[in-house]
Length: 269
Image 1 (cartoon, rainbow, N blue to C red):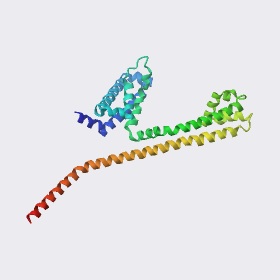
Image 2: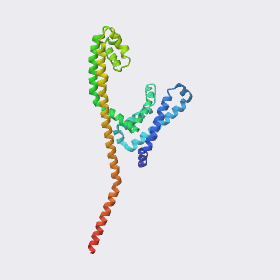
Image 3: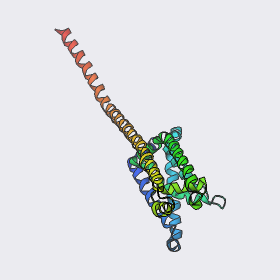
Image 4: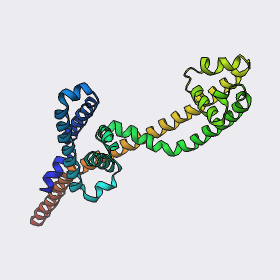
């Protein structure tokens, strides 16, 4: 029974079915946000949603039965378990936020699509390297925010009146969204050389520091891809070894038979 259940759980077709159900479930959850659709098909959509949830429960339960404690040693399996558990918890008034978290089930695509898993793995692997970059950019922000507050705060208190406002204004400048008309031009009417400050800030943050983030992420993804290729190659070698093992055993047996036959023939002569 356990062997048959293991075969079903590890069958690639099972992953494809679960992936299809996740996509369909994400679509139905999106449809449930429409009042028009819910007024016409609300009960049917909710019934369909409940059916899919219990299919997910059965699938995760089967994986736990097959893998046992090894299931909880895999971070992706724990993620699946938490997402499905959130869907099962009844959304009472005190836990009404859990109802909106049902869409997290769509994130299970990450665990069933290998390419998505590799991308997320690369991002997670890049987090340690991002720490020093975050510290650097916060230091740069702080320096520029203090300078901006002292230079432009008295004349433009709505933009740079406090350190917090300066942080927010500089963030909008870094995004390059309306920074010319909304920030720089009004300031340049009273401070003609203010463009030097803001252009310097944009070059340092947007074009230099943020590119460090990209470099760290790309490097981490390359390492994750190389690691995945290595694991895949090792798995292929193991499969080849398992397939070749009976052949090698048979060859050894034949070799032994030939040796005995030669010994017997040599004894007769």
